[in-house]
Length: 451
Image 1 (tube, one colour):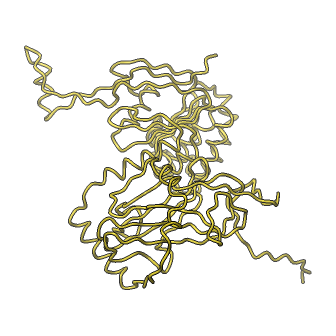
Image 2 (image 1 turned 60 degrees about the vertical axis):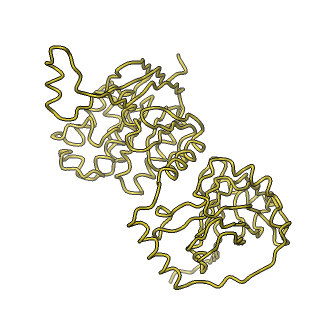
Image 3 (image 1 turned 90 degrees about the vertical axis):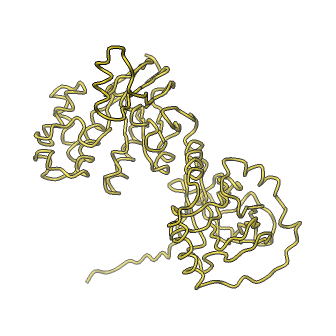
């Protein structure tokens, strides 16, 4: 049996775009075959191989070609040119309600979908109870699906496709309408399917979910695969592209930013002048600059000149003992006058999952105000490291806020891998096999006599 689950060679899907509807008739009946249309390449010479058991994410902006590619793989669309080889039974969630008969009940649709994928009635009889239990939509399972909410559609569609034992599972944003608990349940189910050897192709704008579920990912743009690499690297490149595409502020955004800065300035903190040797701030700079070349972005009105991890004696460290207090030091130089600058950092595991995030909004010092070109600020974050034994990355960011969320900020400098450190523990009980982060508790255990 071939190890290839999906193989595409030079897949192209072209749509004709007309300026107005009448142009279709003109082009069809023109005696000299004059064209009134232009070609739109939804897929443009796409080639790849996906092996059995791989879990692959697809990321990209709306219109990049992700959904078109999945529809070609599932046979919903026929490519204009190129070849596609699919080995195995496919279950897909492309659009809510796709494959459902709206006048049939949920139970009836379960059986119908099972028959369409190739299962007999007897096989579906053995699966139907598990499907109904996973979907968990109560008595609506016996109602016509046209009465379902979008969340009920998602629950039933995923349950059907997960329990019909496909060789290939394809999910395209269909889970985004479900509640948080159901999404978590679906992610756990997909992980168990991957462990069982199912090939998963997962499309989502939730980059955390892509990194968490997928080992490999494709970045798509304008119908092409720009990048085929480990999911962590693809997600970072995608974030970089999104930051690059923001462009200049609109007048409305500028006014909103000015209003926010004025509100924040009401609680302005006083920053004392302090003399620190240039030599101490330059320690580890060579390593930082080498790490910082990886997908660094920002408008550079202010830049991170160096990032250091220090113990409480002020010494550089790259290995931290579980429970040890350390200082994350950011050295920021202003290249232009900046009215307001916020700062933050992420701690990520080896696969790029954000385990910890914090920024200056969560502290009394919400921002640096009215900084002048040429000024240098030192920002120290002191925290206790209570992470399991592993290698970690720290990503650092400085930005000017537009609203009370980082989704509406202008990035001055973002360094996805400012430094790395190892956590070690002399205590085997602190290896934390069940999680990454230790959560401190006040533990109280009592034996009670019931009255």
